[in-house]
Image (cartoon, rainbow, N blue to C red; front, side):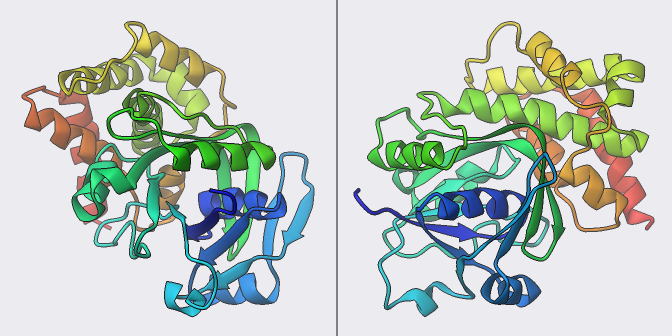
Length: 305
């Protein structure tokens, strides 16, 4: 499509960074937001701070509903950049005829989206990067990758995905159209969900986990890999070793967004991340004792707050 219009649901860490960079590079981008974030987007713009401390304010178009944009061009593709929180709809609205790219840190979310919108209209996406939501319409990027990989449910070719990858490239963002997106979905979940949950339990950043709790983290990686393979995901044989190597390459003070939310007493993605892996394991009869221990211990802590 010659002039793809991109709708971003959520202007938090992921939606803000990717939507802002896409808009800055000339893509036709509109944000769906509300409250103080919507006001800031309209009156100030989107403030992005890169890994070198450089701040930029990017003018963007924002609305509270898609109907406010009814007189403009149709939305071709929506990037759902909200968090998968208990009781919240991860994709509150998708305009008729628009494709949906999911970016949530949950192995369940693409399937839930497909139940609502159909597999032909849903494109699982995987975000990589450390993005910090520092305030309404403000995002800070930490050193490391910044990419969005996208695929289809069955590996079929897709012009929508190809156009989106081209737009990301023009914005200086990484991304690939992967023929088997499920390998990437589970590879990311193996790292993010497990280091985040164990980090919450230990109240420590990744450096402590990989040095002092390496055996526990490794076991969580192994259990996640077993669940994925039982669902037919063709993970590499050495995926656990690869994930440990990736863990070792991260900054020692890094924490996950779920970990930061939990520490702040906010609603968090624990169930959508670890709970989802456990449920998918139960569905195929794969036991996950370490994941069970961590998840249930954290649920118990939450219930006492």
